[in-house]
Length: 365
Image 1: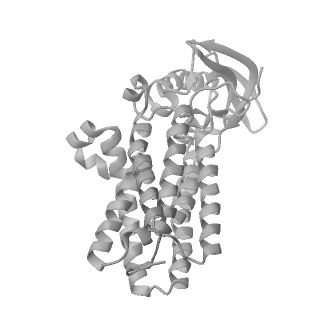
Image 2: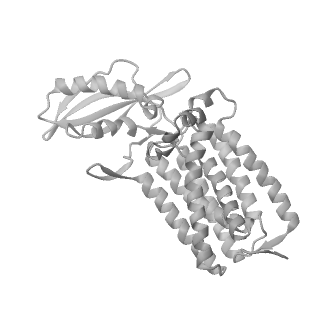
């Protein structure tokens, strides 16, 4: 019997009325802010005028955001979004794709250099450094949201993503429920080749509410949540009608029921650590070489490393859309292949050219 890691962190840091500030918002905004200061220092050290830097940041920011959203919409569910185009704007409902961000950045930088006559490869060699740190922080945001989760496993490194039901019930009826928690009951079962582990779910509620009323609500709401909400449907199960018991404390009463969860790889954490490692490697090399780079080597090697890793990590990630379950390679893997091939071709070309580039023109070594 293995003891898994319970992941029940709330995605919300704090709430003020109807406004909620989330970990994901903090991570993505913090990533962009950190990336901004890093790239700004790089431009200053290479004597790039402020006005050129400002325009560059504008193109980079909007191309990344637009690419993230459109990539998800058109790579993973094109029919839905083409028939419901206004839903593309509903970014608060989730749905971002890193392959879309990569495509958006390439298009945005191409438009920038075409308009302002700059070096395309010079920019890309430096952009990848901040893309690494932003990617690392975004994946931590995904972890805090309990999203983009890994595939089922019985490894000791497995996470139990119990937050979706553990906290959702409390948030949904905050005037009734005060807190919730889970604990493992040291019992696993295998159904259709997937390991499930049994959990004890405890939900505290105010003393003024009757046990029967709370029981009736939970008997209806929890099975409904597990059936309707995508994040719960694929991760938590009730193999039979929930049995609810009650315990009385001084300040509140507690409803107790059992639920089954699928242990999964924390793929977001693996990705974040890999992106952070890439950041350290490329930033260290950039500083040691003092910005004197063979044009295209940074960018092409980054493309190869990143998307080979993305191809591999997809084997232990849960599919993002239903149609991927019938595919030999999922959409993320198929989208990685063109970037890997392009990276290899560009690396060969860059090494043959052996040129140091500037922001404005090429200089032969």
